[in-house]
Picture 1 (cartoon, helix red, strand yellow):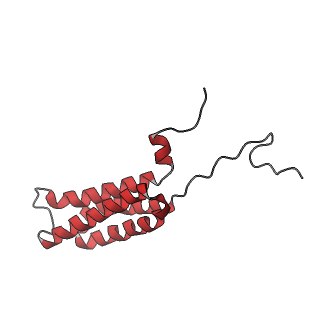
Picture 2 (cartoon, one colour):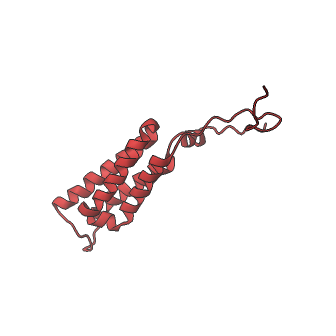
Picture 3 (cartoon, rainbow, N blue to C red):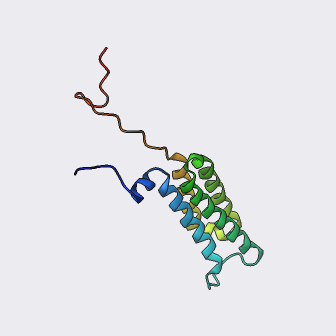
Length: 133
């Protein structure tokens, strides 16, 4: 009755860079939302607004692909970092810096994530005990 194996969403989340993808998707969504805001505070309008949409959509795609293709997580992590840095110049100072920071954090977490090693069978002296000769 004391099964410690994660099931369902927990297992899916632990087998991929979930938080890196989540932060990248949030950063991209924030970059997309800024040009839609009914504020006179938006710095770039018109063609520059297209850059916000494009970079935001690519950042959302990179975050989602981190989830669904974890084997290529390092490529998508670097792509998310580069897109976030490019958003500072092209889309309202990176979504007023919030979207850029979320994208940078997501890309860094996606790049740094590594799959968990399978648990070793614990012997009487523990899992790190040397094998007897």
